[in-house]
Length: 488
Image 1 (cartoon, one colour):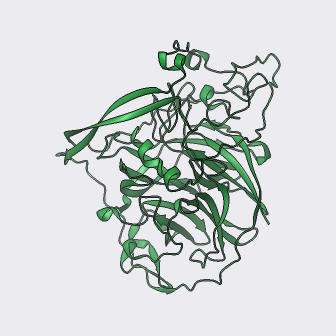
Image 2 (spheres, rainbow, N blue to C red; image 1 turned 45 degrees about the vertical axis):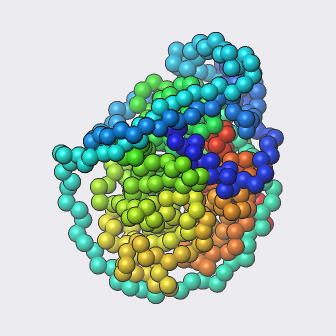
Image 3 (spheres, rainbow, N blue to C red; image 1 turned 90 degrees about the vertical axis):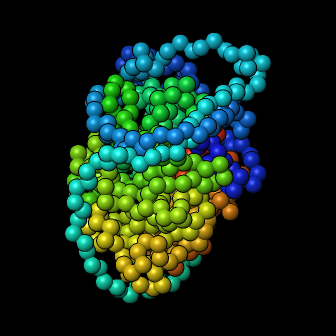
């Protein structure tokens, strides 16, 4: 995972002009159950714990990848982990349910720590040149080809630029000292993204990216027990003090499970990262990107394809549809990083190429054809059309746009889009009366002047009125925070 350090430096190099530390206020909880014990300091949202603080930009540990070439054979798709273990957690977050797993003795301080200098770790990592798998798995037949027509789709008048005020960090959602105590409850020490969708009435799903447990040492997702993605659920309607997780999908005691496996072989498939999610009836959908390699050029990476997975058991296990894929032709194709939103009779797919530097394209598909790529129409020059396919979609928002989050605000009847704008060194928000725009000018919500190395900006679906809640990650912390701004 050391490659992520090189790739995500782009959030700082392209996105941050000045690096200034922040001093946010965080809500904390106190033990509530009779007989509850004080937690170990620094491990949860309890009276004895200090408030979360952001990591220094001068890291305590520096992990340097030492890349060497290797010739191998593509092993083919790894088997999905379908083992699931459900356990009842204490309602009091200050009670550690698995001290035998999470409260292991700390190693003695190293000489580097005693001297107050960063610890240096050299991490050998193979860069693979792979021969094709000689026994590829059989793929079931795809859906019947669809033949969508061409329809006019004029843009709506441009909306005014949103007016943003009252920017506030609400709470740290993951990791040590977080309101969810994920380090003790699910062995989640470091993770990122926090992509949210309404998974059922009164419930929100939250998907995370590359995650580490033991020996977590930021910046970035460095450490042991690497999982490419995770999923939590929450019914917490009061967002003013954070988002409390009801549960996570687990495969062992106090251990959050990887949902979509990856080969974890650099230059073949290093990881699979969620990009959005939505529910249609009893089925959950998740868009994801299969990442081939994290590039050394800041703000870029290289995908194999963007795809869609689905779950028919409420997010416990997932299937990557073998046909619902958008291949990355010559490394420049759109819809590698997608944000999918159901609205009316359609599911809209907003997409960018595999960098933090591309523009936004748009497609739509009938709700009953989500997994059929031949049923998609792409917005091009004022029309919905299948002609030319996904490589010919027109730009609806100019570059640079990274890690999109899009929603339809049904109360206001307005589309909202949040993303990282590396040119402005900020997370920004735009609004439009139609998915194809014209989209308003972008308004910064959180700046790298406040939170260096920031990225993400995924909107909470229960934001309402003037209250916009969204998640934010920072590379130096490598954890997820809930943010709030007021839209005037």
